[in-house]
Length: 313
Image (cartoon, rainbow, N blue to C red):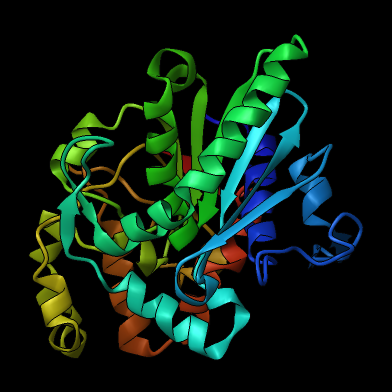
């Protein structure tokens, strides 16, 4: 299992990526207060453990895709930004539309299977600049005599793009990079089909909050059979849910916060098909009772508690 300290550092890097606007971070990104956690001010740069300059990247229409990278000790950290459309209304609309371009396309030439067209487009818009810089920083660590590690991370859409970016980086030099790459995702939607998942061999820690519906999109084959439980929601997203079945990758770690699940559901357990369904069933309760604040918190604030409320599967 991943170390919770490393996990919190990667979450901080993922949150820091949300601060990128117009391809840049705020001027005082190293010292500014980014969040208050447990009554204490937090700076994402320091919590992530960065020790040097941060490089930022953006791409796509209206810069709706973005990421950053920097060095933290012997680690090269690459973080992709989640959905925020470069913090503009027009960009946010375009970013959400990109999330719903969920039809599968071949993952060639990077790997096998089919992947989410919108997420692949996001990764490809950043790939050239980000991977070129990643090679430079990796070589810098290696020349300094350190044993470099590469960590690719992201929250929400950023996690999905991180998954694809890590595969693209591994393809540059499989012998050198593949065993040095780790992927940490938080509240990330699924990226590809069964063939993609079966051929995805990177070390991947997938953090999912108990009631976070984003982690269940696009649906697995088994979840598709439960759509009727969602009533009108199923009708509203019927076309979206007709996609071929997607499959999760990596090692799932559930962020289970009792205050946010009505006290009625235990942490996820794996069924005979290898899929976790309790969270999906609990989401039904969120939709049925209109607990939108809980739904919102489960995709955001609950991940700040991952060092206290985690269950390894």
